[in-house]
Amino acid sequence: MSTEIYLNGNEETIKPIITLLMGINQMIADKDIGQFVGQTIEENVKAIPHSLRMKLIWYSRKEPPYVPPMGIKLVKAEYQIPDIDRKKLDWTYLKQVMGGDNGYIWGRFVATVKLDNGRQMQCYGATPKDAREQLDRMLTVTTAKPLTFGVTEIKNENRRAKGESMHIEKARVYPAFMVLVNSKRINRIEQKIRFEEKKSKIRSKLRGDYLEKGSERVKMWMDKPPANYKKILDSALRFDDDDD
Figure 1: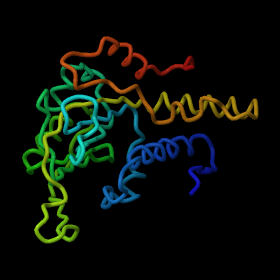
Figure 2 (figure 1 turned 45 degrees about the horizontal axis):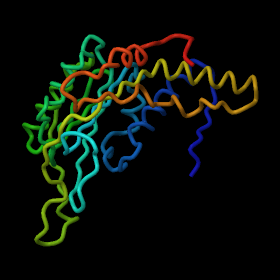
Figure 3 (figure 1 turned 180 degrees about the vertical axis):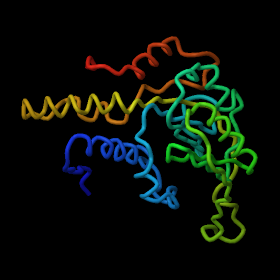
């Protein structure tokens, strides 16, 4: 299946569509599309284009290497937070948002909140309380306002043999990484790449290097911020014409 999408229209019409498509691409990358059943195309289209957003990643192992021993399943939890409040990017604060050194207990209950920017956030937990509390912590990082909340239980009884445990079992997950994605900067770089390709008629060597990658992964499993944390933030938040 081709990964190229062709769009027609003027610049003002195309720009928000490009942002939307890149956002959808990042959401479904390496995920089962079934996770997104229930969120309609209409909801995605109505959403305000992303500005600065964050990915938070937990693993059921306290620190790298994130490779499970033979026969043991490694749980990975990954959530996105839209419209990040730049005043909330203190590393220590974000570590607490992720539950601190002990993380939180992941499981089969999923808490969902619809936001006033047309988007939604979700979080899985071992109980409705676990899921909602972790979701509430993540909500303190966004400038978007919550509108409605809901908690549902993911049941997989039809996918297990008699006598086997639930498909989704609870597990304590620990802070692992954080990634910042500055959509405005990514769009600016993409426009620059397209201009250079059109002018030179040669496919840019930069293509694919910047699209939806965001910042480098910030280590959240450590006891203190990485020495280069400020440099990572400065690079991720930059929005100018001098990106290399």
